[in-house]
Length: 208
Image 1 (cartoon, rainbow, N blue to C red):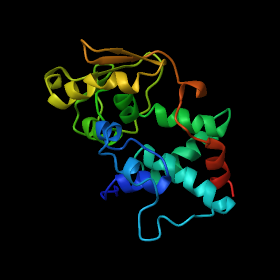
Image 2 (image 1 turned 45 degrees about the horizontal axis):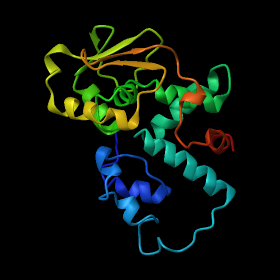
Image 3 (image 1 turned 120 degrees about the vertical axis):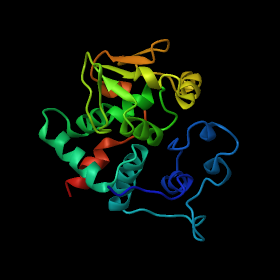
């Protein structure tokens, strides 16, 4: 599957906010967005005036990049959310948070969602005792997510766990640092997803 391989700091600058795509670097003075908080390119410092379409597009692009998904993936996730009962925008965010790569990131087993995706793809993660290598796998209440026994000594997992307190673990997840495991206590509520997202704009973008 296609994926973005360019400089991720440009994505933050393009969307006008930190997307925390480079882990700890985003919290230091090396962060490119802090030094150049305007879009990349020679015309980046000009004032931009967005149309209604442009505002909705930027919101969709921001969330898609935040979760590290290509357009086809993201659109499919939106369609799944639209078929579910309830509010489509909230269903979308809940579905994104319940992805296995997102849960691995939220528990602190990876410094970024990109790293979490790699961790899952390389079969370092088990769900309910069975290895799962599908980043889009959706966890549900009661599931246990853990790093495989033989992979518990991985240096990058230990490094990520040292900094998890800065990000915090969501209330709907319970982390056991000693066992390198986490439990899904319940499906996430909209109030527990504290990212600055206006999901209704995404719904309006795809409904146009």
